[in-house]
Length: 303
Ligand SMILES: Nc1nc2c(ncn2[C@@H]2O[C@H](COP(=O)(O)OP(=O)(O)OP(=O)(O)O)[C@@H](O)[C@H]2O)c(=O)[nH]1
Ligand SMILES: [Mg+2]
Image 1 (cartoon, rainbow, N blue to C red):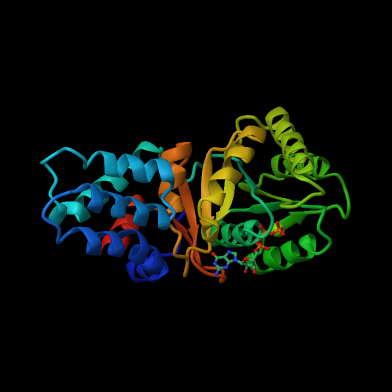
Image 2: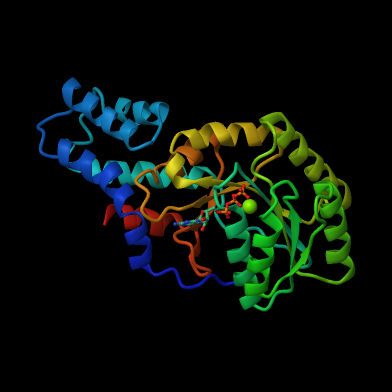
């Protein structure tokens, strides 16, 4: 069975402390002493939520529900936010990483620098530690140093790698699926480029790779995952929409949550895109990848 390194609550609390201050602390401080949800209080609350990167629509929806009602008092705003956030995360779908009995394929996408290769290295390590045979497809043949970086990670993790210097990414993926099937690997992780000459080229390349997977191993693709940097805030939503069109995303990994004050993007992604966040990166080390457990995340935010 696949088990993530123990996700100590203290770790998580530290990682989300800036987000907690922004998203919960400031709002609660400004609202809870008030007598009623006056228009002034509501507008202030909405501004704070938007400032915390929750997104304009979501912030407006949360505030609208408090307008002209008497059930929720300002002193209960903390519990109100907590319940709303839990519901949003639950509505976005199962946050558990999908896995097959035989070969499981994970297709990892995202713009440049968000942490795709690092995520793959960390995942490879976790899977190896739980006794799986892991193959990595170096389908980022665009950036000169990309495969070298992946080599370092795969060595550290003890995973095997398929690479073709300057080759066609779709061909790398084709070959790695053959190899993974023939040699009975448990896990195939596909790393992709984050930057090409332009957005159109990048999306075309990703669609081509996706077509290869759909043709050769349609039932084996467990996750088509978008990696987002927690610091990009609302910009991440725009990125997600573009990737959504090119490949059919199933989930999101949020990296660099450590220190970020914009972790509310987890909620914005769940709300706006109905995509579950399944993994979070909370540092640069091999062990700094965690399963995303909504209740833990919410408790860490609200404690
Ligand atoms: N603090 C922190 N840094 C991270 C995390 N994940 C990745 N990084 C750092 O982010 C930088 C970029 O990571 P990469 O894995 O190379 O990103 P990439 O998406 O593969 O980049 P391209 O291949 O250029 O598209 C590296 O310096 C990583 O160490 C994280 O969870 N926390
Ligand atoms: Mg990379």
